[in-house]
Picture 1 (spheres, rainbow, N blue to C red):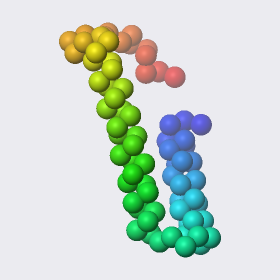
Picture 2 (tube, rainbow, N blue to C red):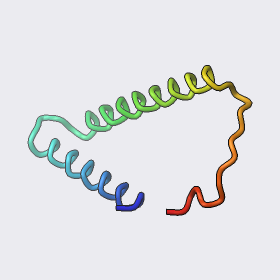
Picture 3 (tube, helix red, strand yellow):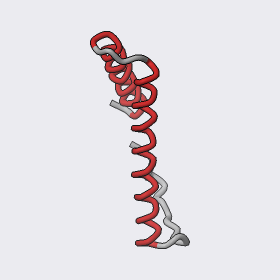
Picture 4 (cartoon, rainbow, N blue to C red):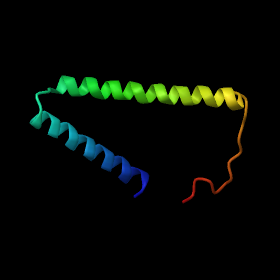
Length: 73
């Protein structure tokens, strides 16, 4: 699966999960949106922590050169 297919798969599974919880549980769309927003904030916090640790370990002014074929599959 390429990146786009993986993204689509994730989105479809998320849609199915949201639909299932609306049908099977006593929650509403606002509760789902709040839970998704909480998860988004949790993930962003983790990413910020990773970025902060990278800066602590290697500094801010490090530059990397990428090989020409780096992005080729």
